[in-house]
Length: 216
Figure 1: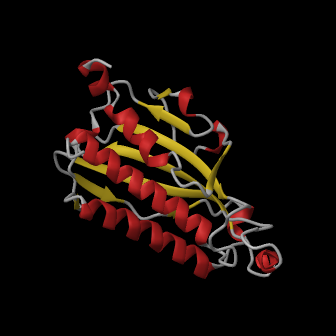
Figure 2 (figure 1 turned 45 degrees about the horizontal axis):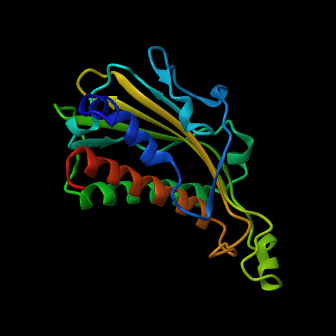
Figure 3 (figure 1 turned 45 degrees about the vertical axis):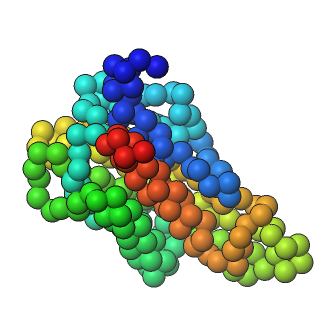
């Protein structure tokens, strides 16, 4: 691939790395455009990443132009009946966990978490649009068949990436994933599948950043 093409695909590649699940215990679910909560006018869908929905602005700057990040508070789609069934304690736990792993991953690479717009600053916003948590009682079947879960966690997250100066929305990703019914490392946990999805996204985003900045 020629250099110019690589440069143009930098932002595209970061969304792919950040939101394609790299863990073998995770399975991507199909999502629909109607599940988006943001307006995507001017963005083009990259269908090669299906079932994940990826939309990129053709004129978007490369990820290598950003070294600072504003992490907006994690939001929930409280109109979703599945989320209404999740306890407030679990919602807070998942909200805190995603914020923590993203912040730690960025800081570990020498990138800064800031609160004010400036040159070279990207705003990252996450909305958890759907979430299903299994119960430990349901998954107690693993005691009979080790490693087997009869119910797994599922989470759908919408992520938006906006330049802090121009306030232009450059990319939107809608990713849904669930744990694996087989070879589940912690089948009695009600939140381990969602945590693993968040871990994968944070690690993937950090890796893409490092690649864009020539660290890998």
